[in-house]
Image (cartoon, rainbow, N blue to C red; front, side):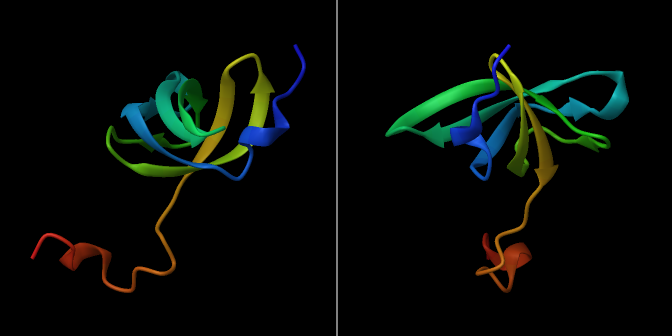
Length: 81
C-alpha cells in the first residue's frame, strides 16, 4: 500500500490507547480541514486520551505515533487548575 505522507507530522489524540508491540490503538488526527481516524502503532504503550505526533505512515490508514507534549505549554500539568 502507498504511504500517506501528508499525515506525517500531524498531531492527534488517541481514541484507543496503543499496546506497544502487543497491538495498535486508534488516533484521531486533524488533517485536510477535518478529522480522520487511523490505526496507531507505537513501540511503547500510550494511554487513551494522550496527545501524539504522527512520525510515520505505514500505508492505508495506519500510522506510527509517539507521545507528544506541546513545547509551547510550559506548565502542562497546571492546565486544569
